[in-house]
Image 1 (cartoon, rainbow, N blue to C red):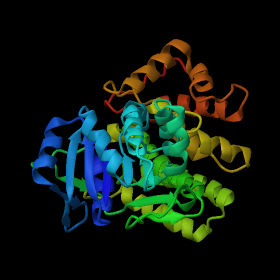
Image 2: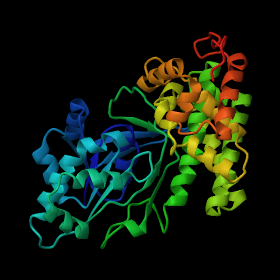
Image 3: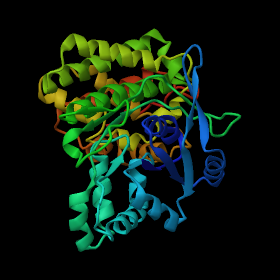
Length: 400
């Protein structure tokens, strides 16, 4: 069995690759990093270490790699594969769509004995595979689209594993947390397919996607924004602070109430899930940089993402949102100068005013109760929190 995986980075090597290899697939990584591609080609394997007390490790074998620019080889690999996966970031899916389209067309030219092909975007977002499908189909002729509709599936998926940025002596070695979760809906699969070992196949993906988004992603970035304001550099440092830990737990209790209401999760079971996620954030065997987790604040503050959407939904249902409002206000202070979105956010707050940013970027109208509450919390923080660089936030003039 053959698998093609786009992205030879942390998630690809630390999560998707090992699961595919363990399920009997020969895994071909496709990436841009010439050094990593060459090493994967030469060695055919690499080590993975778990961030636990004993630092357990294992070898991922049956792997090779192709440079993304070698289009002929990549499309041939896709044509011969049973599964194609990605971990390149949602914004980069459009950049690989043309190559995937060529691989599909090459596969479909010979109509005889076509095996189903599953293309799964293992990205940190909702509906990633369908977004990839739209991009891929833009590059395909209509005749191939009709044939692909019968033989190629793009099931959405939920993936979850924390893999921090790291530098190891062996550039192929990867350190990952012990916890991982990969969920795929059976309704998105076609024909006879080999189940991937460790994947949770479910009837409906939505509950698991939103449980992860509003618990793992919401909690993780909340810890980052709270910690950044206090001057911490890692999530683990921040979560060792009882006050921050209490705020993060407060956020997750609010999203938990929402999730239990929306999807009928058993309350005690979901409470245990929250505690498990809190344990992940405090894992002492990691050094997960706050600036990595907090990066791209405009995306994280967008109306359908991890902070604004649960806050708006919870408010509409009459649920508590005070900790979510605190997390949103904290995110608005993220000003890491090496993050382009943080720089843009702070410039817009200075030039347009906080109220306009909340209305345009967060899409919360000025008349909405959360709009005023976020401004109030933001202005309160001017006095309440030291800035990450050790200086006091400048709040001589409150933002409106």
